[in-house]
Image (cartoon, rainbow, N blue to C red):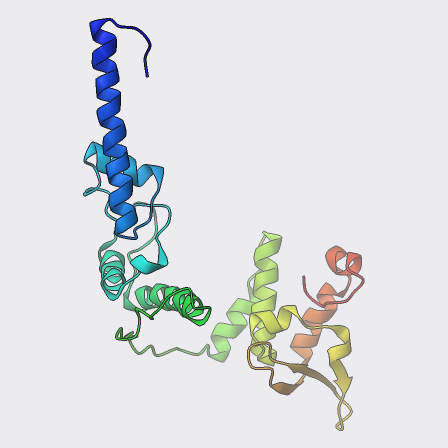
Length: 232
């Protein structure tokens, strides 16, 4: 409070007291409704801007995540128009965001941080996607393409390696020298486990895949790592 007995000081202190009372009232209202309480939210309610900032808060209480919130989130994703070079989300892109959100909520329910799962009645609907395979000519064009940027060249080589062996990106990155052994046919085979499923697999090491391994065997980063991995 301001000190003094002049009229303007009294008016200022009266205004500050009314403001303090409004802040306390807003706090108590949010507390009774078990809603998230932050400085920003209280400020918006006191100044009358809370209707404009319905969901623009840095955090939400788990108790506020209802079925209605999920539907509103989906509606937002479907109508959001990026201001940068990104394209608006298609249905499957929206469902992937919902799927990640759902996993987080499922974890909260498992740890009993939430009494019920708001996703119980929510149905995800992915559009069927027909994935096209590369034909041999397309693969050859990729193999013959050289990039001046080293990182892009590495990405291309990893992709070609996967085409001739089959493992996913993460499995290729985890490939180690001791995972290659000689099979009954006298040829080299990759013997490993898929990280996602822990399934044991045996893959013949074709010449083009072997050539890529040889290419990176003396790479400075591989050498610095002691040759523990084929790719870094």
